[in-house]
Length: 117
Picture 1: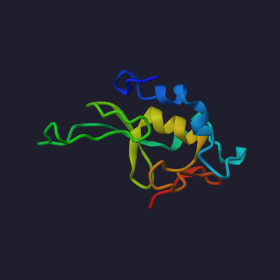
Picture 2: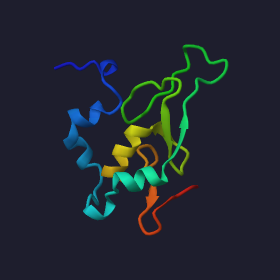
Picture 3: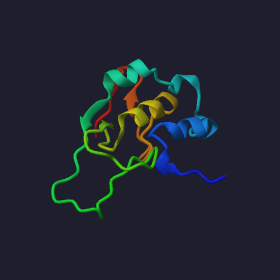
């Protein structure tokens, strides 16, 4: 089966392969799970704008869903400064409380605050 990822919205990948997101952590226990409310409360966001002077060769993507960012899309920013579609990283953090790129803890469970480096 061949899937056209361009035809998917940024969260559809979670629906296609949910089993792939549950086993991302060797310590995948319930204490690592965050509620959507907790993630949304602490996630910093910004609207994406194509960098000035950027041509078509500049392509910034969300590494969670592999889709290019579009102007005015809401991005979620983790403390490590990595950015993703806000909806993608919210769902990711509800499954795994680490940055998908650098694996740093995203939200401190005890203080429920974003950890910035």
